[in-house]
Structures are given as structure tokens and as C-alpha cells.
Length: 196
Ligand code: HEC
Image 1 (tube, rainbow, N blue to C red):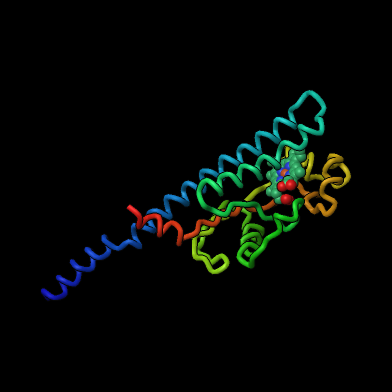
Image 2 (image 1 turned 90 degrees about the vertical axis):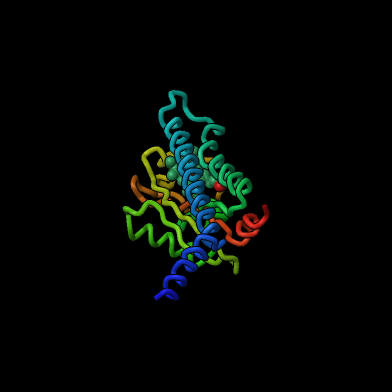
């Protein structure tokens, strides 16, 4: 009985001391941070798209370009700032760099397709042999996106010119447009946590 008690006390002690738990806390903090960063960027896109929709002046080339490109740039910055791999993925993509690259990514898109109420999820994943947490967040089409992702021949001219392989049109309001993808590597963070 005493031995059991000692074992339990030791177990709790070891559990508290266990660096894996400290690491798990670190990573969940990072997931929260990733969620927040993505929400802010998504909001930025909605506002940019809405401002275009509500504009009284007819849109120029430049205003038309300034919706999804800044989003891509901001995602890259957030990735570099945090040591994450951050991007967008889509089955019907405009920029070929946004095609899904792994089976996990393809499956994440399918999961959002099948579950229209699913907003986001994260899972443990190995990316090119590197363990980490992968956070995925859905991107839906709203009315203000249709100016550039709606009926094919109503797309602004620069899109057809710049993206000859474009697949990102003929969407309807409420469709799944794509997915934000944030990979938070484990190894690097675990090593960082060890340094005082
Ligand atoms: C002014 C035109 C325009 C509007 C409006 C617009 N987009 Fe885009 N979108 C683009 C362009 C151009 C790209 C390709 C950017 C690049 O090269 O990375 C793109 C790319 C994307 C991508 C990345 C995947 C891909 O296909 O390459 C997503 C996701 C996306 N748009 C979602 C949206 C959503 C959601 C809205 C509405 C809130 C929206 N877009 C409104 C022009 C637009």
C-alpha cells in the first residue's frame, strides 16, 4: 500500500517535471497564437474585398490587385516571424503554389468540404519527417469575393492574363474556397525551450 502511494506521488512529481508537458503547454500557446494570426489575416481579406465592393469609383488595375496578394504576403511574414510554415491551399487554385502538396493537406480540404460547419482543427503530423502540429482553417466564399472568383468571364482582365492556368472561378457564395494551413514544427520549439 505504502509502495503504491510512493509510486503515485513519484508519478505526479515526474508528471509535473516532465519536459514533455512543459512543451505541450508551449505548443498549445502557439496554436492559440496561430489561430489569432489567421483570424486577423482573414478579417483583413474580408475588409479589403468589401471595400472594393462598396467603392463608388470603378476599380482600377491596382485596386483590383490589392485583395488576395497582400494576404499571401502577410501569411509569409507571420510564418517567418514564428518559424511556422504558413500558406493557403485550394483544390481549385489560382496561384499554382497553392495546390495541396501532401496527402494530409488533400484530406484536410476534403474534411472541410464534407463538414460545412467545421471552421478549423489541428492535428499532430509529420511534415517531411518533421513532427509538429498542423492547424487548418476553412476559407469560405462571400459575396464580395465573386468580383474575382465568380463567373469565369466576369473576372478582371489582369487575372486571366497573369494566371493562365486559373481554376479559382465559378464559385458561389458559401462555397469552400480553400484552407489556411499552419505547420508548427515540434523539434525547433522543443530545443528552444531547453535553452534557458
Ligand atoms: C480583386 C480580385 C480578388 C478578390 C475580390 C478576391 N480575390 Fe482571392 N485571389 C485573387 C488573386 C489575384 C489570387 C491569386 C493571388 C496569388 O498569386 O497568390 C487570389 C487567391 C486567393 C486564394 C489563394 C488560393 C488560390 O486560389 O491561389 C484564396 C484562398 C482566395 N483568393 C480567397 C478569396 C476570398 C475568400 C475572397 C473574398 C473575401 C477573395 N479571394 C476575393 C483575387 C481576388
